[in-house]
Length: 153
Image (cartoon, rainbow, N blue to C red; front, side, top):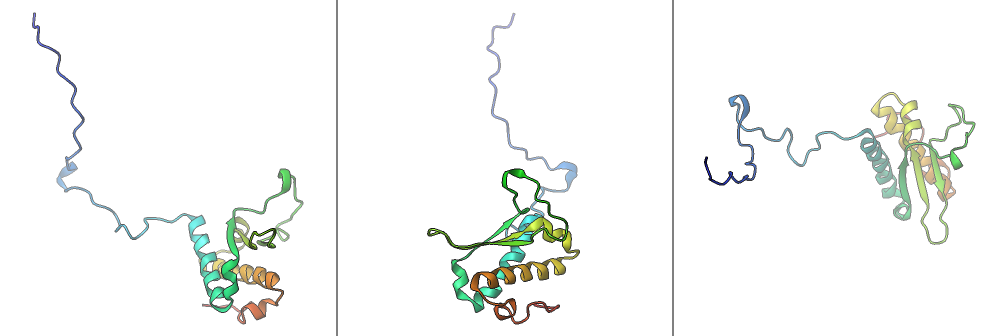
């Protein structure tokens, strides 16, 4: 009988094998380029683009929080009774007790009403302009002279 001690387990070696002789795999895209962005991230970018456009003209908007929510909330999950035409696309929460004003854009209702990315960008900008106008007590045309016109940049 062999009285030698059993072999000690070793740490697993890193995989160095290149399958099928094609060389080691590298990244699909450079690190500074996102491989894919979620729909929510792309939507947030549309809101941010719209806000940046307006902040150039209205610097006081730097104090306002702009948010994206999936859908308008219903207190306690109750049925809101909204039909497709009455579902809000955005909302405004006035400043209160030291908290800044908030403008909220509801992603899902906007996505349902827009077919293309360009349509979505226009609709998001119109919603942001309307909410900013309500906050500032101005007309949407005063906030953005091109409000309501197709083909905005």
